[in-house]
Length: 261
Ligand code: MN
Image (tube, rainbow, N blue to C red; front, top):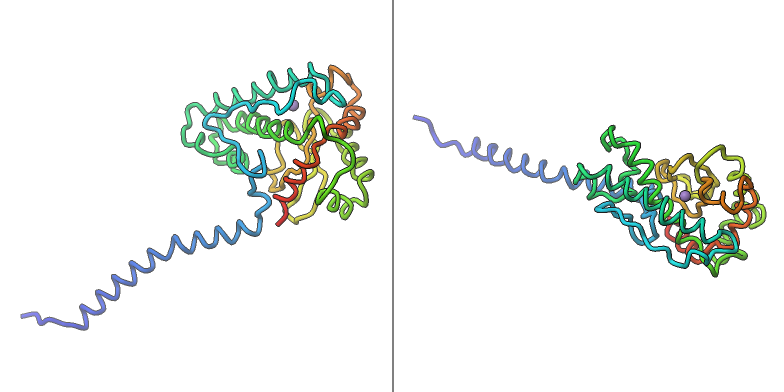
């Protein structure tokens, strides 16, 4: 006859308790390591569409222009603004929605999240999501960082950081304009905060956004011919130079404050 053995039962219960503890600890550890790594690269995980929120893809919507088509006349004519917003930006929105139509799980992610993790977007729609998600995100930011009351010298934190990094605003503007003028073909010129926490001028091709390389976009200007050709024809440097007359420094200050660690 088998005898009741308290030692065996003790080890059995201890084993079960240990297994339960081990199991329940694992997700906590993963969550902790994720939150630690996200603090280190916080700038690259910030919402890009605006400093407060990410851009929804369920469905993507064309945001209204925050001013009249002719309001940025100091730099951009009304016809260009109308075509750029109502046709070009609208088609990025429509194409993104079409690409995601069969993928409800992807629609639940923000545009920023899709672009940061393109490898997890199915290959048959990856370039559509990259080009049209990027186009939607870039233009959403672009309308916000311009204003009829814009232009002039930078103020606040952006002024300080530009002076620290580039010496003064004129030097920065020259470097930004030169990078935009030298960029071959379509794309964007940016001031970003890079993963080393430095301000840097970079360009991207097509509709790529700097978050795809872990940088946070603070200022971005559109180098596609559709942004300037009606008024400036092939004179991209003249467009780049005039663009500073409509730059919305208060919105750019909100972006640089959001990007500061
Ligand atoms: Mn454009």
